Structures are given as C-alpha cells and as structure tokens.
Length: 240
Image 1 (cartoon, rainbow, N blue to C red):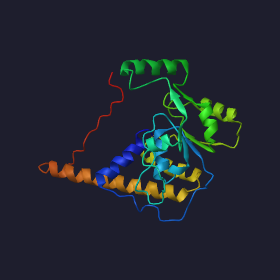
Image 2 (tube, rainbow, N blue to C red):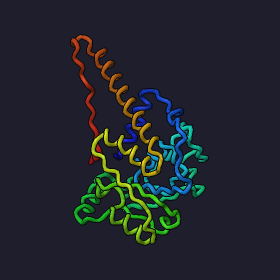
Image 3 (cartoon, helix red, strand yellow):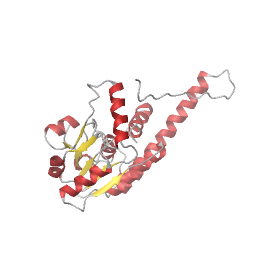
Image 4 (tube, one colour):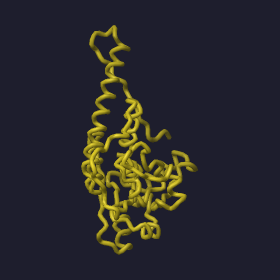
C-alpha cells in the first residue's frame, strides 16, 4: 500500500499518460465530507479521486495531496505546503522517529523495540483532530509501526465524542489489491465510479508498461530467439 500509489504515478510517468480527462461523469461527493488521512498513500489516492478539498487532516509524512491535471478538482492551493500554510489542511499525527536526524540503525532499533513493546511509534494529535472534525478516517492495520494503531484511532474518536465517524482500513497485500483500494476509498466517499475509473486507468497503464518492458527486452536480446529476459528489481527498505 505504501509504495503502491507511488508506483501508479511512476507507471503514468513512464507511459507519458495525461489523466486530465479521466472523470467524465457528474458524480460529486457531499460538500460535508471531511477526510482525515492517516496514510500518505491514502492522501494521494484522495487527491487522484478529485477529493483534495475534502481532505482536512493528513500525516506528518504526507508530501503530495493532489494531482494538478485532475479536471474535476478545483483545489485552489498550489501544493500541500501551501494548503498547510493556509490551514486548509492540518497535520494530525506525530512520530517518535525523525528520519532526517536519526541514522537508519537507530530507527531500526526503535522500530523493533516498539514492536516488542506493542507500542505505536505514531500518535494522533487530539486537539487538531477535534478541530478538523472529520467524518471519515482512512488508515491501515497491515503494519503496527507504519501509522497510528487502530487503538489510537479509536481513542481519538472516543475523545472527540463523535460515534458517527467512519473508519476505512486499507489492507492490500499485492499491487492489484492496491488498485482495489482506489474503489474502496471512492465508495466510502460516495464517488464509487471515480474509483472504478481510476482502477481501470491504472491497470491499463500497468499493462502498457509491461508491454513496453517486454518489447525493449526483446530488442536488447534479439540474438536470443523469442526469449524475453525480464528486468530484475531489488527494493531495499533498510540499508543499515
């Protein structure tokens, strides 16, 4: 999930795709929709669905909120920093880890200690959470140290004294399931067709990218009759 949507943008960049005319229907969310996104990827999904103006709370790690070429998004802020400076969106989480200060070995030790003690490294800023008054929270339960725990989320809701706040937990375990989360978020925000279109768009461009890779592999290995050598990718999250 955490890399999935960034993969989506990478696919579009590789394929020279313009999403400016994606949404063709008249489906619109409720003007009362107020989203608290506790995942950077969920924040980007909301932006890709044209819901940036409804995102009121984000994490301290979110760096992208919207995609400028979504035609049905009339978001007036130029960047997430601009939106934050105008209080159009607020940061609702904090973390014990500062990746800009701590080395990877220290971070690894803190994460392991957190897991052993069953204590989340993230927390919800209750005062800010209360001020933004969300009616839907998007989070996850796949990783115990990647976002505020579900216990923290439930405690924040209880403290806000609003039992009507909905929780959407995204828990994909494959790239195809990441695409399904587009529909899940859209459905929860009453714009399901947008999610269906976004998923279809993603899968089409993923297929296009795969075809381009196969063609290039065939060209690079033309002396090997009909044998396609697929590129191999190594992803390292921790280097220490």
